[in-house]
Image (cartoon, rainbow, N blue to C red):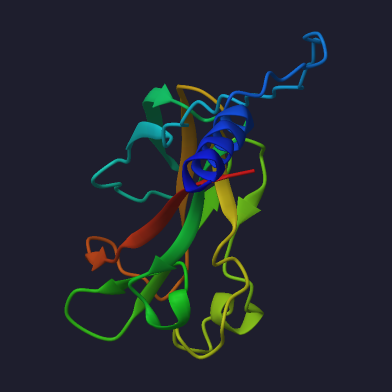
Length: 180
C-alpha cells in the first residue's frame, strides 16, 4: 500500500510539472520613442581692440575700436559701455598733472550723439569734477553684431582758465559684454 501511494504521489507530481500551456497567438505592439539631441553651445568669443591713448584736442580726435574674431554670438551683440573714468564720480575730465585743475571733454558716438558732463555747474567752471554724480555710466557707446570698426571722437572743451601747454591726464574704463 505504501508503494502504491508513493507511486500515485510521484505520478501527480510528474503531471503537475509537465502541463502544456496554450498561449494566445503572438500580437504586435508599438511604443512612441522621442530623442532630443542637444548640441552643446560654445560661449561667444571675440577680440576688441581699444586705443591705448588718445590726445584730446578742441577739434576732436578720432579713436577706432575694432572687433574681430567673432564667433558664436547666436543673435546677440557685443556692447561697449562707458564703465567709469579716473575722476571722482566718473566725470569726463582730465586732471592737471601738477595742481587741482580739470579739463573737460566730450565723446561723440558714431550715431552723432554726444556724451558730455551733464552737470552744468561743472561746465561753467564753478565746481570741481566729483561734486555731482553723472548719468552716462553704463551707457552703450558702441555695439557690434559681427566684426567691424567704429570710431568715437573725443573732443576737449575749451575753457578760459586752461593755459596753453599745460598737461592733463586721465583714463576711461570701458565695459565689454555680450547682450541680447
